[in-house]
Length: 111
Image (tube, helix red, strand yellow):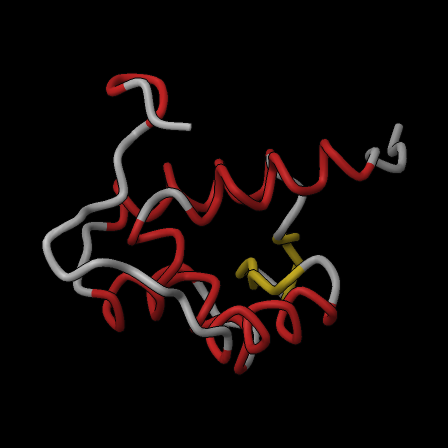
């Protein structure tokens, strides 16, 4: 059964997905067009096993869906607006100090 996530849950899920560079790359590829896992693995230069784990995370976060296509399964963004949101994020200006990195709050007490 599907439910509509709360605003905070949506942001948390999106944040979790974007927290990993491979998942970011997957989302950027899928914002252009749906893709099959084998093609995604080749495009991203990762093993199919590793890709499968990241796709499972993105599915669990509700950001991608699977679409049966004959004997194959295609992946696409769950909502086309995610692609627009990614475009908006990429266009945003992030102000960072040259010698600072983005610390992980869970391990380094950031924020």
